Image (tube, rainbow, N blue to C red):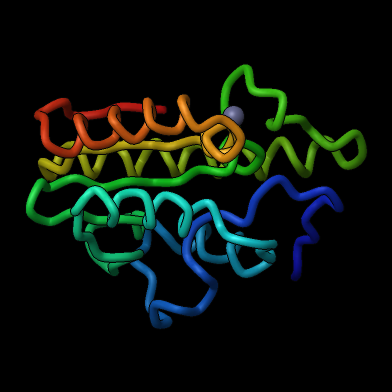
Length: 171
Ligand SMILES: [Zn+2]
């Protein structure tokens, strides 16, 4: 069964569908299904962040099979994983992009609950395995695109996270 995304989709999130092979670890199967239903427009948030980090001299792997959860970026040298989360799909708390469609509320709420539970499981697993976990929210990236000073500030925070020893951070 195909689940249709709402018309105004805030963000295509995560890996380009199908770009990283077919086998998903168990904790990730549902995430990939979501991704397949979503289309990207313009420069993806992932690419936007990648370019900024590359310019800063960071090197990373993109949506590797490991670690768990196919992080959008993995910096092995720093044992750091970065997820770029769409506020809608990943239910950014208190964010205006994380609205609930007015029809089929039960369907959406169940779906969102699964997404949130899966994110929590992935995060827990990664932290337990000694990875450091960074989430960059879509709304942050939207603001970065419009506001150069804010963008520089966030990139500094990302760099500090990567090179530091904080286990987890959301931006
Ligand atoms: Zn948000």
